[in-house]
Amino acid sequence: MKRINEVMNHQPTIVGPELSLQNNAEPLLDQIEGTVEFRHVSFAYGDREVLHDINIKVEAGSSLAIVGPTGSGKTSLVNLLPRMFDASKGQVLIDNVDVRKIPLALLRRQIGYVPQETFLFSVPLAENISYGVEALSTERLQEIMQSAQLTKDVEDFPEGVTTMVGERGVTLSGGQKQRTSLARAIAKEPAILVLDDAMSSVDTHTEADILKHLQKVMQGRTTIIISHRCSTVKNLDHIVVLDEGRIVEEGTHGALLQLGGLYAEMYRRQLLSEELEDTENGDLFPGR
Ligand SMILES: Nc1ncnc2c1ncn2[C@@H]1O[C@H](COP(=O)(O)OP(=O)(O)OP(=O)(O)O)[C@@H](O)[C@H]1O
Ligand SMILES: [Mg+2]
Image 1: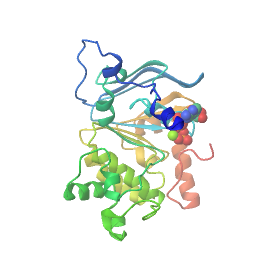
Image 2: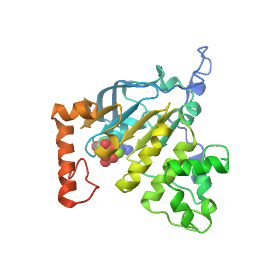
Image 3: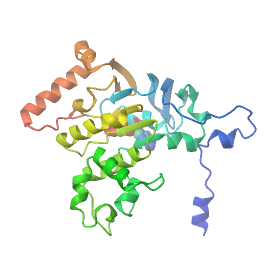
Image 4: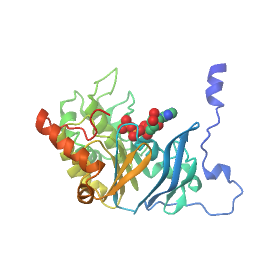
C-alpha cells in the first residue's frame, strides 16, 4: 500500500493552466491551428544544457525536418511541444500562445507524436491503433492502416486486426511496431504530427510507400519529421540541422546542398555508403 500510495500521490511537475491558473480570467485557447514556434529556447536536464537558443518557426500546415548527429538534441527539442518537459529559457509557442498556457488535454490531443521508442499495449492491434480516440469505423481503420503500410502485414496475422499484440499474441517486428505507432498518431487526426525517427526500422522501399501516403495525411497538418535519412526529409518545406544542441544550418534540401556545409557532406557520405555497401539504408550520420 505504501508503494502504491507513493505513485498515486505523486504530484506531476507539469500541470496545465486550467489547474495552475484557476482564478485567471484570461480565456484559454480552445482550438489549435498548428503554427509552431521555438523562440530563444534553451533546455537543460538538471544543470546540463543540451539545447541552446533555438529559434524555429513552422507555419500551420507546413513541414519541418530536424536532422543531426545522435545526441544533438532532436528528441529533446520535440519533447518540449507536448510538454514532456518545459523549456528552461525562452518560449515554445503554438498558434502564438505559450504551450504552458494551453490546456494540457487540448495540447496533447492535437499532437500526434510517434516516439523514437514505440510503446504498444498487450491488447488487440485495432485497440493499439485507436488508443486515445473513440472507436474507429472499419473503413477508417483500413484507411489508416493503408497510410501506415500495415495492411499487408495484418492480412498475415491469424485474426487480422483483432489479433493480440505482445506476449499472448503476435510479436511484432521493429518495423511493424513503428508502423502501428504511426497508425495510432494518424488515427488521432492531430493538427500537429511529430515523427521522431519513426521509420528507422522500416526498409527504404516501405518508407517510400509510407511517405507517399503520408503526403495525403500531411495535407493541412503541421508535420515535424526527425530522421537520419536524407530520402525522408529532402522534400519537406524546411530542414534544420542540429549539432550539439545548436542550429548550425537551415534551409531547403537544395539550398543546403549548395551551401556545401554539414548537411551536404552528410548527404554525400550517405550516397557514397549506399554505393559502397549497396544498401539503401545509408545513414546520414555514420559512426557518430
Ligand atoms: N532523460 C534525459 N536525462 C538526461 N540527459 C538526457 C536525457 N535524454 C537525453 N539526454 C541527453 O541530452 C542530449 C540530447 O539527447 P537527445 O535524445 O535529444 O538527442 P537526439 O538528437 O534525439 O539523438 P538520437 O539521434 O540518438 O535520437 C544527449 O547528450 C543526451 O545524453
Ligand atoms: Mg532522439
